[in-house]
Length: 90
Image (cartoon, rainbow, N blue to C red; front, side, top):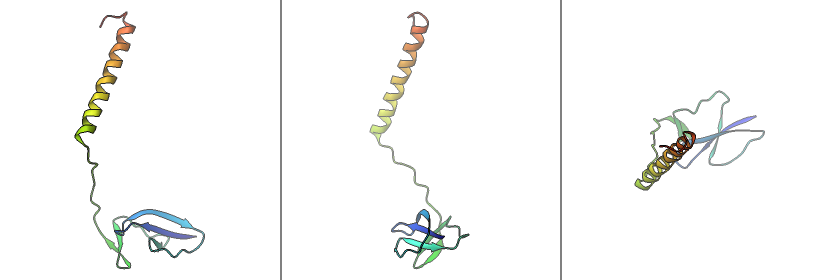
């Protein structure tokens, strides 16, 4: 069994594959079985330490508005359901 790190253009590991045979691809790096790629990237034909930057998703103003509308609609649905359980008096 062969263990490969699949890397992107920046040398960052995006996956690990266990294959039955060897492969020759620029984005697949053969690993020792016990090698841990955490906190490492492949650069100039060797593994180097690096700190992963936490990337928070960018939320647009429209997405915030949409989320608020959905939240308000869910609240109104709950209120209507409660009202129907109490005999129609809000």
